[in-house]
Length: 118
Length: 108
Image 1 (cartoon, rainbow over the protein chains, first blue to last red):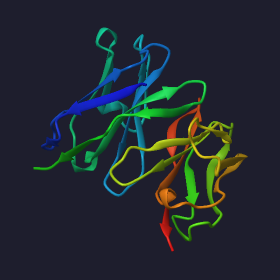
Image 2: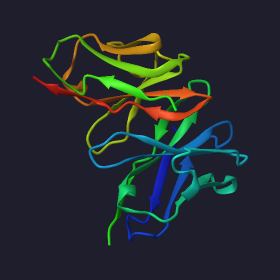
Image 3: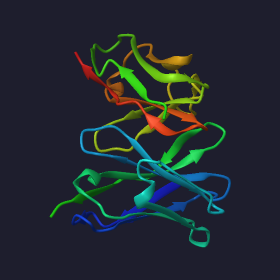
């Protein structure tokens, strides 16, 4: 059974760079897209970016200028970097798997709360 | 971008009630519409994909329907475990993935 384990810094100051990682356990890494989604406190879900095992990427245009998603196939891991964070980037960040034949997110990480505060 | 609008925002219901949540798209879309259930402090859980296909392991009291710009999630007989927030999500090649704002189902 596939599991996603995510980690990264939980407290940042404004203008710093957010860095999160997500490792895939118990399943294939190829044949899927892997994605990051965030959820501000008491608010809805926002898709950030996705990547596949060969490095093909797609970004939410609203965040693209500040976001980089990358992949390490040998480690079955993908990562998110977001530069110049502000308080508006405070959210729970989730990694997830994209099922291409369903165009839906079927496996999710546990979530990482990232707080941006001076 | 395709914007998704859910209604109602909050729904109060009794155990055993039939519950329907609606998701409207800002433009006509294909049937790549999914529904998720989220409980406090947990990641969302996929319930329905391709508008009406039930994800493996999800109880059959959940069903989805719709096409074009209007989609619905129905819970045929609400159970105590179903009190949660529900989100719709669309996929389109012309738009980033987007979600509805959520519908909270509360105990009446």
